[in-house]
Image (cartoon, rainbow, N blue to C red; front, side, top):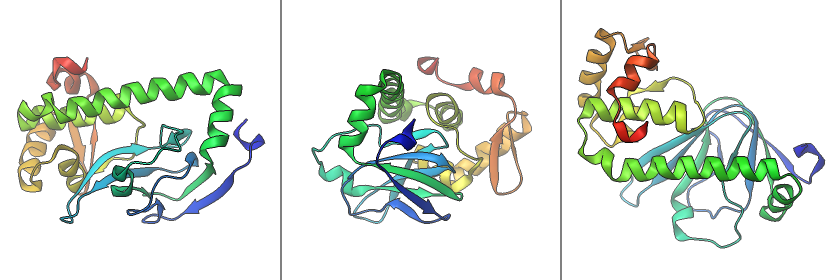
Length: 203
């Protein structure tokens, strides 16, 4: 379906930006293959990882010609070999109009992702570090597109904690059989146990 509409095919190697910092968003990317991460960058040099997008997903989940300065702080970077189709906002709106199922899916994803961001910005602040880490895994795998196993630094960036503190809690979760690690990447091994550790507001 998407191939029937005007688009530009973009190939990105790991570490290559589909949308770099400092530029406004000027279209939507449909990821045909690969995984990208989206980060928000501050003038101080700090950055915050806010999500992963995998194959068969669209980012950004909007199709607006109105620009906001916040867009210039956002970067979309490939973390695996990626092939994406870039559509103008006008073309995306046309696809949404002619294929209501795409519109419904984008609105649903936008709603779930917005709720997750609201939670991270409010209630998540008051949880224990262990709960915040479990929440991050849950949000990533349930509310958004599933990405590859995360590194300790990526996880610390998502929840806004020191990497050293995250490492200690991950060791506890690994001992409890909830997560596993190969020394660099971390992934969930017991989904039911993870959910029991999460905030009730997420369920």
